[in-house]
Length: 344
Image (cartoon, rainbow, N blue to C red; front, side, top):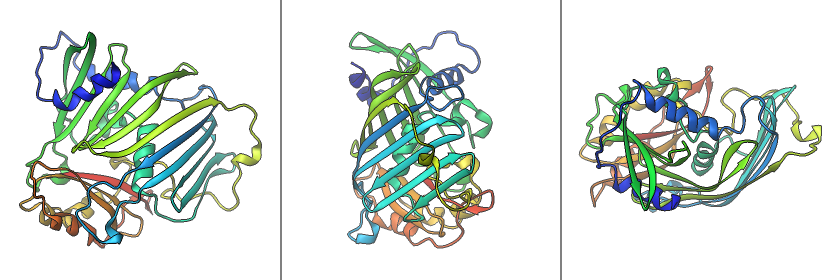
């Protein structure tokens, strides 16, 4: 039934329903509750060991060049979490391998590349940040989507849908032909089962309870074309006895920009200069939603089309992004990496 409800969200986005009397910002309560229900890493949480087997799919790149393709294939993610200051994360995806730890010696990281693949960032976004923090901490958002709450039922199951769209300040000079859509589908208990974030549709299904928290055992991420981008199977168990050596890596603490976790607009600098340099020409006469990874070396990688109402979306719009060379995003004045979406 939950899978059936999640499948309805895209089709129901145009549906309107009368909402009951609510406090001024009821959506914050829904977002905060869902975030709390799925937050395995809060102070006082039960130590755990998580293992995720995932598969990344190619996506739509509108190019035959090998260098333009999305990195795809099978991967694994493993995390051992004891406290917010003692944890270990390890990811293997194709030729990419990275380990990040936090301990009394600080946060350290080892990786065989200074670039985290797009599908790795996509997976960790769904695992670590199922509800973006800016939706329950509105001061972090560029713009407020104008949320609306709708109640309904399907197949005998009640649901709550919260949706809205926004135009970020960074894009005010670009043609706004495709709405930046945000939508979330909840069960009445507050359980989050699906989200749409600007062309990326994420389903969390078959949750189990661990330490009083909800842990979805299956994750599916699709584009607005309803094309699979990533699927994942999640297993969780108590951490048990873990050797101190597991949280030890040689070398100095990692720079702020070297991390496996996905970064977000509200914590990254330099995005205005990056977008302003090319967004107008990329958007000219093309309507769609695209995603790219702004890398630490001042380039865009793994550029893909997430959705377009046009049958013949021109590859030229993606090529403009691929050719960008310039400033890199930064965190604490240190080059970093961030996945970005544009709707135009």
